[in-house]
Image (cartoon, rainbow, N blue to C red; front, top):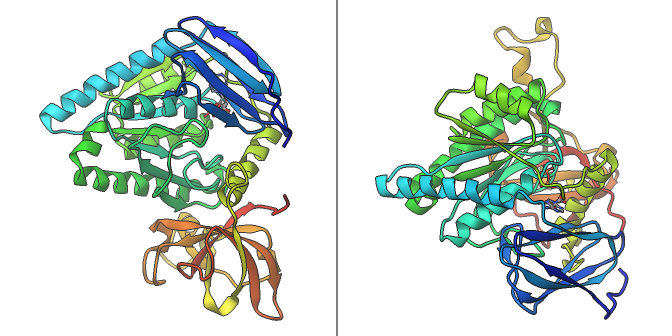
Length: 421
Ligand code: ADP
C-alpha cells in the first residue's frame, strides 16, 4: 500500500450533490469532512474524522445540505455530480416507513422488499441506503442477500441474512456479528437451481421465525438483495424468491422490461416500482467481478485492512466428515423407483478426502450429527484447504479461529481460493 500524501484536494459540495471517487489499485484514499453534513450510502460522516478506503473501492459521498470534503490519496477518478437519484431513493424509504408505522399500529408485518435489476446498477448500494435510513429512525430491519456471486453476508457461494441494529460502518459496512448463512457452494444460482431455490425458501422460513420472536424486527421488515441474473431461469428464480419471502414491494433498478414483466406476472398486491440507477455506478468486467469475489474471501480471512491473523493447522481426515451437496444427474432409468432426477441436486453426497480438495473452501456446518438435515442447516464459518497429505491422512487449513474446528461436518464448495498474499 502506498503512503497517503499530506496534501489533499478540497471539494465544496452544493446541496443535493455527491463526490464520487474510485481508489486506484494498490493505493489508499482518505476522506475527511471539514464542514457541513454528508453521508455515504446512508451512513452519516462524523466531522473531522478521517475515513480510509482500500484499493478498488468505488465511493459516493452525498450531501443534502452542502459540505466541504478533503480527499487525500490516489484516485482513478474523483468528480462532483449533481445528478443523483437520492431524492427518489429517500422517497422510497419514506413510503416504506409509512408501511412500518401502519404495521406497528396494527401489530402486523412490516414491508418486505425485493431489490432486483441487471448487474451493476447499484442493487446492493440501494439495499444499504434503505437499511441505513430505516435504522436511523430506530428500526431493526432484516437485510437478506441471495446473490451467491458476491456473498455479502458470508462468502461467495452462500446466501444469508442479518438483523441490522446499527447503521453500516463507513469503512467496513454492516457489522456481521451473527449472520445466518447457508452453504450453496457455487458462484451462480444457475449451477444448481434446485438447491438455490430450496435454500432461499429455507432462509425466508427462518426469517419468519425471527420476525415472530420480535415485534420490532417484524414491523421493520425485510430488505432482500438479489443477483443480476434476470433472464430465463434467473427470472423464474426471482419470482420464486418473491413468493418465498412473501414480498410486498419490488424495487426494479434501471430496467423497464423487467419492471413490466414483473407487473404482468405478479399478483396486484405486490407493489412494483421502477427506480433509476445512479450514474456513479460503474460497470464491472467479468475479471473485476472475479477479483472482487477473491477480495471478499481474502477479507474474510485477513480483514479489510490486513488486520486479522488467520490460523493455519492440520486436520486429520478421520476427525471430520466431508460432504458436497448435489450429485451428478443420472438418467431416470438408472434411479431407484419413485426417485426423480431432480432429487439428486439437493442430495448430500459423502466425499472421500483426496488431493482434489486443495484450495477449495469448506463451510463448517452448524449440524452436530449426520442425522440432521445438513443441507438445510446453517453454517458457522469457513476454512480453506491449503495442503493435502494423503499418506499421512491429513489436510492443512486456513481458519479464522484457532484449532480445533468448532464442528466436524464440512461442506465442500466448488469455489477455490489461492492463499497468496
Ligand atoms: P449491484 O449490486 O447492482 O451489482 P452495487 O451496489 O454493488 O451494484 O454497485 C456497484 C459499485 O458501484 C459498488 O462498488 C458501489 O460502491 C459503487 N457505487 C454505487 N453507487 C455509487 C455512486 N453513486 N457513485 C460511485 N460509485 C457508486
